[in-house]
Image (cartoon, rainbow, N blue to C red):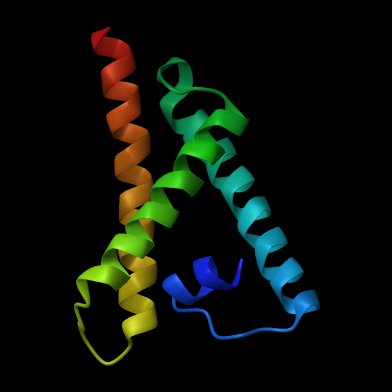
Length: 102
């Protein structure tokens, strides 16, 4: 867990804080999945699958952004969050497009 958090740019946290951060991420992914399901309607994958796709895309996007090492603006954490959000949405839209094409 420490390796993943350090790749995401999160400093060392006590165990209780890590549990809270992971819980907030899961609840946020569920809420975003619910919102995406409402927007996409029949084109989505359901609340939980949308949330999982968004979460996976955001994790991969944040890791790739950190590995590339871009420093944009005054706040690298904000740039990473924006890149992660964009990657999550892009992953969901890409999977939806592939599902419709097949």
